[in-house]
Length: 544
Ligand code: FES
Image (cartoon, rainbow, N blue to C red; front, side, top):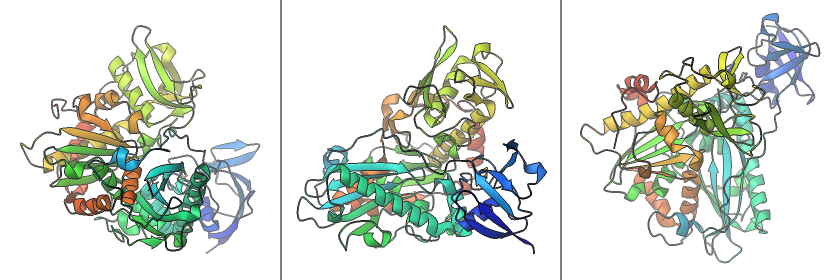
């Protein structure tokens, strides 16, 4: 079989691939950090490269830059030796920090029942520190905590450096299967180590005083951190290497601290419901809410749901896709500077009023903005129950482009919302709503209604709750029945670090959670179809 050399410019990395392999295969083989957030499915448009030398299949050329063909690396086969130059910035932007935890004492602020400060690692003085880490698919966040009094002295966060290898967990698992497991493990360990140093610097503390770590994350993120093969997670049924891992030594991850500093990871309930959700549900008080049926929803690239009370609970994950994090949306972006994060209709002037992070002209739309926009458009009658434009969208609010009519969001019309974006959102919200309905049905007919709901995840308090109810993402209940948890995973990890009782409670609660695979529930697809409308086909249901 013919082999061809693929060289990346300007890095100079180079490899040989078999004829017909894609340029992205070459990038992965050469360890060129090319962005491939959809995992090579041709959907994200991030893997654009300019072909500087060598043959480019005509049918794959999207445009020419200074005479050089531009192609998607994941869809372009190699038929001769090539020199290519990636177009997308590999550097991820700095995370916009919306929260400040420093100075707060988690036991006082977050304990769902009276807990005493009793760290899971020994502490003998003010120099002793512990670290709580939330490893999310999109973001990493950590808290540096003084163990003697349980006060947060530093914090830091960043985008997960594995994003270029895939925006969602399935793409990361596929990347690991292609041989990038070690690379992704090193990336997340290295980035976390940098954040620890950043937080220590902020606290003017010596990271050598770190006595231990508590880490929460979804099952895939924990596998990738520990360099455990995640491929079994995406099998049906899901078969992770483990749901609970024994503590490892911090030094083995390249993390600072005392020589024997352990890293505890919060155990998971199932392949798609990780320790991040379990920690969050216990932090929200679910393990002790004996009289109520409570709902915990974490909205991210997956929607994870826990439904139940102290005695028993059901948990599941629904594949919401990346829409809630701005993925798969033409002008989608993460909740960063320039993102539309809210919208309301000025009915008199028939114009949309947008809120934009940082206040500038919009650069794109993030998940909370998308939900608010869909709700505003639906209320205005500009889109119908299927999310299609009704013809009532005012001309000044319109743009026209290759995707038809869109809603103008920026003055120049370059940022717009298209029908296909609304369709992606409807699929995402339908997956979550159908998951909730299916779990409720599993509890049996005549079961008490949900009395309390906790929303966590990247949205945190920035989710427009009335809009989320308006489009049928969440059950129609009085707003007072809802509460937000900014980061249940991180807060739960902090409590697990500071309280042996809390960590033991997580273990005990796990034994009362039944993990449900939605694919095994016969009614799930019907629920999904019914939820694929605005708000859904049965608004009379789930009313409080
Ligand atoms: S479009 Fe090529 S990796 Fe997403």
